[in-house]
Length: 95
Image 1 (cartoon, rainbow, N blue to C red):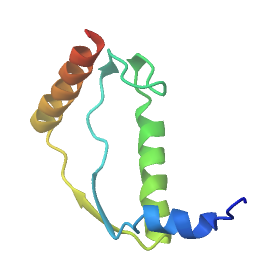
Image 2: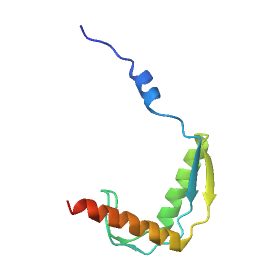
Image 3: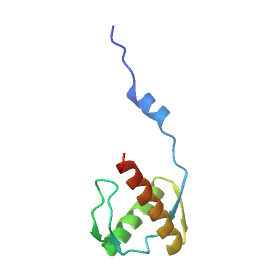
């Protein structure tokens, strides 16, 4: 006998509504010299497009009634964080 499952109920149990996100506006760009996912492409970053996309994401969150808190981006913290991501990715690739 086949059991029928209401997928709407299953989905609602798996996901919780996001109430608040913490974001920082993209401010520091240079070049991208490594790739950690299929959407990243090495080369120069289009700053205007990145800012447009970031603003669109903020507006979407607000339309979804998600509270958005924006903090100032600090370049030295960003550089350290990106270096950590890159090192972690490279370690995974060496196995």
